[in-house]
Structure formats: C-alpha cells, structure tokens
Image (cartoon, rainbow, N blue to C red; front, side, top):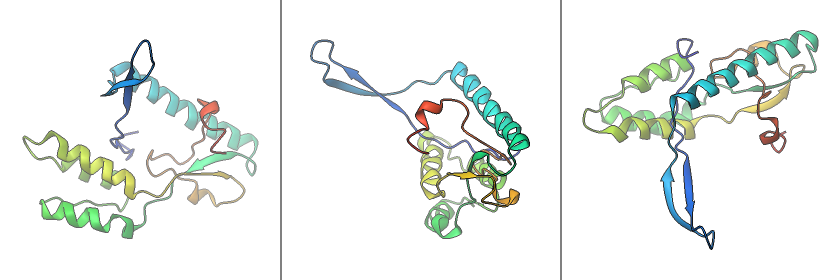
Length: 164
C-alpha cells in the first residue's frame, strides 16, 4: 500500500481524562498508538478494498464505493510555497510523489516540522466522497489518499451511516 503511494498523514487524536466523580474533563492527552493499532488498520483497509472489488463484480453499476479525487493544485499552492521557503519541494502530481516528498521533508532536531506538513497536507486535500459505481467512469473511482483503485467502507459501518 505504501509502495503504491498510500499517504501517511498525521491526524493526531486526543483523549480526555475525566474526573471520576463529576465526569468533568480534567486533562487532554495525545492518544497513544501501538503496532497493534496499525495492524488492525491495515487489515481493515484490506477488507474494505477486497469487499469493494467483490461487490463491484456482483453489482457493477450499483456498488456504493468511496472515492478520493486528486487534490486541486490551487489548494496546495500556499503549502508548496511555504515548504519551498524551508528548502523542500512538495509534489502532488500523484499520491506516491506526495508521500515521497513528505517523507523527505525532515528537519533534523525538529520533530514537529514533518508532522505539521502532514497535518496541513490533510487540510489541502479534496474530501473523499461516497458514490454509486454507475455514476462515474472506473478511472474516477480511485482513492488518492489510500492509493486504491476501488474502496468501500465495509468495516465499522455504524460510524459511516451518518456519512451516507
């Protein structure tokens, strides 16, 4: 997936620490991610791609899929120029080039610079969209961020009902 150009974008998650009696928040902390989280995420992505292909075989014009169009260059112009001021070239021609240019944008001794670029890159992206396979040509089904030609949300459907 990563080799095909899937993006690793920083989207920091937080958790609230609540007072045991009042249940009022007392602190905000970064949510710790473990290797097991990444493994589960990879399997969920694989399941979503696999199920997307399967339903597409059986319902070629009626499959509910999710696409992520390539970003609009204009949305990235400001980020590209700011990164250039720091000596880095951000290339959005395709997701592989963006992933590689983000990986290369490291400042020694500044652990936050690359994370900030990834967070800002996320904000420059076009939003992903649900669609019916009969509405678009197969060339438009691609999920830019995941570098997947076909994708659906099979896993965690209860979180997706509100989206649809």
